[in-house]
Length: 518
Image (tube, rainbow, N blue to C red):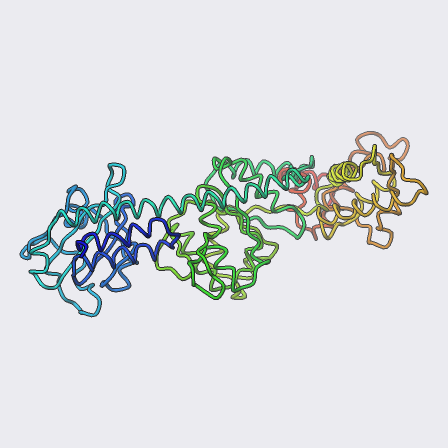
């Protein structure tokens, strides 16, 4: 017959070569320990800074997994952790036992026999194994060398488990990086934020400011304004730029899968979960997580997201074990989340957690002649894609683009330019190498032509001043017309007019008074 120690160690040695979820590996470890050293309860705890976190328990109440034992507050655990060898506490030891009243099914009873051993990995204390019993004589005949041998293999087990998880996370990160490289190779590299308007420059200044901070950012704006590009730019301006930026579209997932995608799951957590999987939070550890369309999250998931934001601790679906993550959150939505809160569709506490730094991305209609810069970018993309020598817009086509209101914003412009180039390409009998996009090819004939809200003055197309009117009178008339048009667009809101024109509110008031504008 094999020695009892050997009998308990053999299954653990076999488990080292098997792919098992952490929870199952640790459960088997504690089960083998109880077979080797029968007792009422065992626990495996991991040291995280000055706190011992239970990873697995057997014989202790389920809520023990949610407890955190600060080493400085538990002298028995401190002695075990830094004693470098197994320690048994005498039955009459006056030091408080952290497990008193926690033995499963025994009510508020005190532990009477306590034994423990540190797990040492690479010369440093990693955590503890503890054994407890109600009978004061339970561990009287225990060979402490046997426990030490078991602890050595236990340390190897937990180290192997952590290495496996590191490899899996690394594999998943590399897989996502491969996807990014594929997009780059296919011409879909992350785009720069293009524009020269005062509105766009203010946005870039805010991105640079908040990017270099650890603050959570809530990006708001209409559909198609480029909120994801803004999130990428914030990440690139941050100290986490060399780490992963992981994105998830909260609106693109079924409600049943959102939680698993965010937090991961263990094998068997639900039908189809044949293997454990890391969630987006774990993949983004050390980097940034971009929650696109965060306003679409179901209320039950919102509460779990709030907990992660508050503590940095998460649990995979189907698991009691907690993981700590260091993730910066950038969220985006085209909804009015404040109104969603009032309507009871979004948690107020989560809204305030996400909107530490709110960032509004302006619609394209407020960016004036930036539309032509963006059109040039998309024209060049199509030129390369279609193997052309040149693609240009006529003057009339440019005017149409500047005058259009763009309800679909930059995304609409991108698609419109692609269609227009294709139309221009197939119009001639022979395929040309130099393509001209006419105004009619834009398909904007039947669309409302409305002056953009932040259009810079187009001196070339504005009416000339009356002959003999004089420079000052002409400038005054031009300024008056510009301010009155802005007032009309903003329904008389002077603060928004000042913001659009890029002037101080007080200076605008003085100018309006001089120009006799009510």
